[in-house]
Amino acid sequence: MHLGRARAVVFAWAALATGACANTERHDPAVLAVERNAEVPARLGAPVATSAPSDDPPTAERTLTGTVRVGAGEGVPLGFEGVHLDEPDGTKWIVAYEQDPLWRAFDGQIVAAKGAPYEPVSHAVPAKHFRVESWQLADPKTASVYVSVGPIVELSGTIAVTKRPAGSKLEGEDAVTFHATDGRTFVVVNLPPSVTGDAVVTVRAREIEWSPYAAHVGGDPLWIVEAH
Image (cartoon, rainbow, N blue to C red; front, side, top):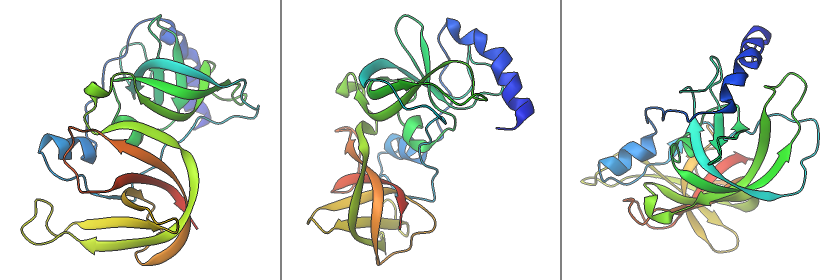
C-alpha cells in the first residue's frame, strides 16, 4: 500500500466503528461455476489469501464469529480493499489487506474463524487485527461453494494436469490433481503460476470442504498457497 493511500485509509477508518458493509458483487469463478451447476475448475494462478502484516506475535488463540465483508462498502474507508469480519455487535476485525477468491467465496456469510488478535506494524490501518488460521461457516446449510477452510499444512506429492474430456461441461479446461505421498488425492482449486504439471513438490496448502450443494468432480479440494 503506497504511503499516500495508507494515510487516506488511516483517516477514514473511523467510519468502521459501526454499521454493516454491503456485499461486493461476486465475480469469483468458483461461485459462478456453482450458479451454472458446473464443476469448479482449478484456478491456475489465482491470488492466495494474504494476512495483514504484523511485527508483534499474536495473543492467545480464540474463535471469532462474524460476517465476512470483502472490499468497499458501507462503513468501509475509501481506499481499503481488503477483508474484514463484522461481529454481531458491530466490531470489525481486519483479516486480510488483499482480496482473493478464497475469501470471496465466503463474502456476506457468517463464519467461525480460529486464530488470534495481534498488533499490526506501525504503518498499518489503526484498527483491530485478527490473524485467521482456519474458518468454517457458522451454518453449513448456507454454503454455496465451500463449508470450511483448514489451516495451512505442508504436504509432499505430485501435481498432475490433464484436460477435461470432450463432451463435459468444462471441456478443454485444465483438471489439476495433487497425489500426496500419504496416499490421498486432492482436486487442486488453486495452483501458483510457477508450478507445472507432473512435478514432484512440497506444498503449503489448505484443505477445504466442499459444499454439499456445489457441483464438482470427485476428491477433496486443496488450495495450494505455495510450492517448492
